[in-house]
Length: 330
Image 1 (tube, rainbow, N blue to C red):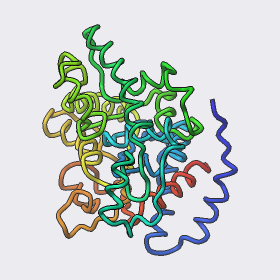
Image 2 (image 1 turned 120 degrees about the vertical axis):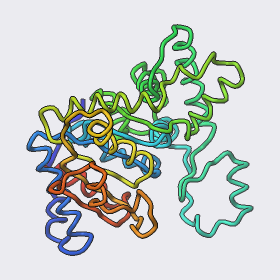
Image 3 (image 1 turned 60 degrees about the vertical axis):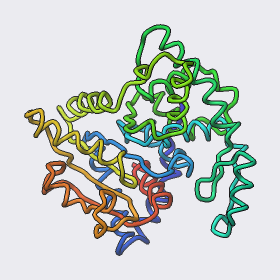
Image 4 (image 1 turned 90 degrees about the horizontal axis):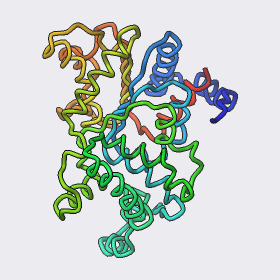
């Protein structure tokens, strides 16, 4: 549907190669070059997406990566799943607050009264985004319940996009939506902990209020892991597999654990992740998964000692689009 013009990314690649020579910037080059080589050699890549990346509009370059076949699966938080759709249908109603660090409690209360939910410097409009999507999504939940069918969270979102019921309300170019791109390419989106999201909360409230019959309409996190096992075994059967992680948390740990699950728990042989890159501002000394250095993952049977390993201690909203542009220049 969209032309992939590599020339506009070529300048970015050359700029990075010429200027990013030391420290974190040098790792950006190394990680991007290894990513490109991984894909060029027929490898598959899973993107783990934590943080508020959809609201940060990472979709502008992420969508191009998906359409270009540089990403083959996504594991993300429930927030990232829904917030790309929110931005797609309500972008013109978003409000940016550049001075968010200076806001007083009464300023925050005023945003609440105006039904503007703040994510750092960006406010998501409750009525135009959340309520609009909820109303449409409910009909798909209801239809599934009436037909005694069950779907994963992302599959309901794909149904909305494919149906076109919101298309006349898009407020950004759909080429900049990573969800639209994922729908076009039919790649899976694994969403552990989906209930930790606005739409997940709304789903629970719909069951509690007896508007929906039961919770099992939406497939569970355990079933999501089961589907991830199938994807990984298929993807790794004839190809090396890579893992590109933005942030940490459940999106990262859930998906990378599929390898030790297969090997240690299922007693089956499979390839380990052969490429690993994480962009994070966490440090290793706090004991968090987000700050764990790549070599720690060797002890869990997630990556090999000789896997390509990179950690970039920086802001993903700055670094990720640069790496994506570098890879897209190929």
